[in-house]
Length: 524
Ligand code: KIV
Ligand code: ZN
Image (cartoon, rainbow, N blue to C red; front, side, top):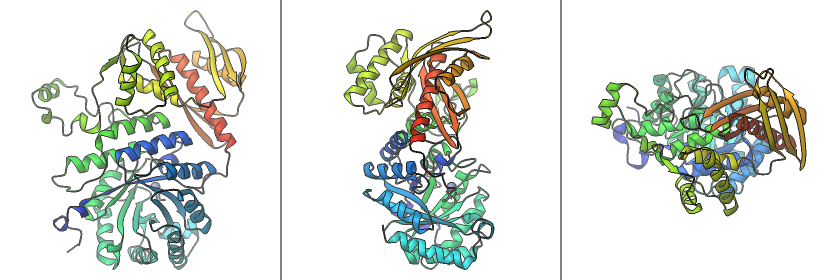
């Protein structure tokens, strides 16, 4: 009988470690790159929500990645801070340096073990890979007790070879053994069988925590992760909103809520406070510009909406008729009318606290001024408006380029649309006029004339923060220049102003990225 059967579980052995890789695997999604400030904000939210391990980046990949892991290691105290390293001396030493300031730091080292990857990607014989496993884990153990080892492409790895590598990795000092379904190929029964096989065949498996890292190419990342937990895995690697390479990773919010909601049949717990899920989801979506689809489980805009009359009637009579979880359990609060034109600074400050923001006096002062401006334009101000307004403020610090003035002429009588724009660039005001296919194109042409770059516009996206025609428009602009991608955001009741500010924000981020230009990122 497998040692993993539910009946054998004690209270403690039912605890599932949540390892968040939004800042590493998540950031590897094309277009999802984040700057240091943004990564620090996300890390803060992850720590606050009770995530056990934060994989903060891949330190050897770039100076920016190193800096992010290093800074997060300096500031996060409640979660373990982890960095990724290939099985090379340089990777491991760079990773060790990055996590050095952490109260609890982890090195996560990996190498491919499938026949396909060993032959074509690594061009190494299995014996050489096995040697590299022992060397890399031993080297990492020289820097920290907390070493995780992963067999990349684990789900397509020969079982005998996997057992041999896992046993050696544990002997060399790995305390966590991670089995990735790197290409999202596995099916739940099959993936669970790998975990059971390891538990039954690797003699020292009880000396390590078994972990899983599932990609979502077949839409099975969460199902595979849960099947693995039932089979004995006790760490799940996941990301907020399921961000990650290609189709993404297992979505943390789905793992946490599935374990919570189906505790009757999945008697496992996590340390994550589910009420922080909505906040984390919105923050990651805002920063990356990866909007969550409306019907996405747990965090989609429609996840708790009941449209059909029959459902609405049922929910009114008893919420349990059509709701298996409450909106409150994921931190979704009813959109409440919060503040108005006459609200004072104190009420505003209290509201910020309530929404989870801890801002310094100057930042509160700036945000309050912007709130008053908004209240002049928009009668009703909701939580979402305050969130958009503060996020907009936070992303703007240290900018080199600022919007000063914008005028647009468009509509049926004004063909082609014309834009007149002034920017402050490094303290100097510059102005120009331009035309375009539409008003956005005309305005963006002005920016390109005033601040020429090779950047290509990859994404232009608008969404309304709240209902109503007076809603703020939240705009995301993604720019790409020589392999560097950045997302700019802004919100304003005027869609054109938000669009230009989002472009300018992306430009500012690009300038920072250019300055920090480092060797091209390495693939994990
Ligand atoms: O998908 C994968 O195999 C990975 C490893 C580096 C864990 O991301
Ligand atoms: Zn991955």
